[in-house]
Length: 308
Image (cartoon, rainbow, N blue to C red):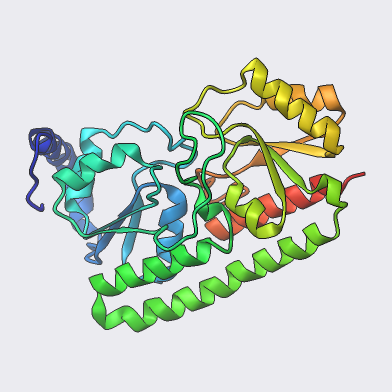
């Protein structure tokens, strides 16, 4: 284990002892299995883990701190999370203030670290408690997602310099796939009536997608840590949908959709969802990968907004 420091070092040590004690029960099975000696890359949530796997191409072992389906805003790390962080060879996070809880990892784990959103032209949060701060959901645009791939390749190249060319090649191929999704979205949006080119969601997590696709954006609340579904938010969103004659409204998989369904009933819009943002699904679910997440959301949005 790497050396840890700071006020949480004791918690890390205690948790490590518990992990070691519990793992002793499975020692025969562990000894029979082939050890995975690839460098461990730890990401904060599942979307970033999938990007790292695509770019890493099997050269590294990638794990996510958050489990499938978890809501990343306001997550509270456990002592075992801190142990995992201290044992990693590289930690990747989103940045842009998304993982406010992440700073304690950087204080206690002596591990190389990279921010995958570096270099993305940010969109400010328009309303709520965090007005003016960068919207953290940059990965929701297949255009911005290409910067994530490049940053992952650069970080992995620093970790394994002799495989840097492999990571760069993987990132180039990945960028082409992401660009194909972006192009398809732009073409579809260009065929929509201009008045209805508005993406209305529960959380304002689609600012980058809307910007890069040529859509206006509406939402009930800016980020999930804000007050959600206040009477003022509901009234404003209802007026927007009615005034622009928007054919469909959407909600995300990790939040309740009751308020958005209320907007749909009040305006006659179709309720569509769920959109996926903060987490992938399991391997048998609708969005087992980052690319599948983008394709699912793009298809759902285009179908919804194409209805007359």
